Image (cartoon, helix red, strand yellow):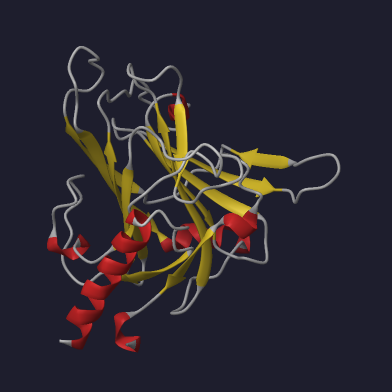
Length: 254
């Protein structure tokens, strides 16, 4: 009973905080996966019911909200991180077909993870409505008088990553109006131990994370970029103080 009440209160807190127009909560628990999951992109399994962590995206601190909103869910078990997202969209676009194609030029859901808050390594994952994966390891420099310095290892491919998508509409057909597309993602936690960038997480581990979205639509004049926190400027991921903190959490600690 105590667990069920806490889950309800968590959902209400996320929803009310976001709908109130206030600054979004910059920390959330990545709760334990407590049921069966079949990756099919639909986010309709009971296991996702109490795992919503974001209900509002922002173009930037000054630009406000995007035309199309995004919902994000997250959970974990001892071996994997699971993320799901539902992206409202009237024109779903995905023409790229190969891994690491520049899917960020069309429609894409993005996840940026900094698993060790003492290091400037960022794992970048992107997923298109067609199920194409883009992943990279970025070495982000800290801001200085000459700006930022970023070294990206696009040749790095994570292992065991899975994603499935669902499209409520028609892909690559601007003549009708779509409703949304959604994605379910599984990322093995061992990917974050690459070259000892981070250790396998334990209960209470705190990771920096930003969820983001690229939106290309016949109903927009240009590609629209948004993120789960109102950043000073989209894409300047080196502003680590603006990131959301994800605490990896086990239900048995309640």
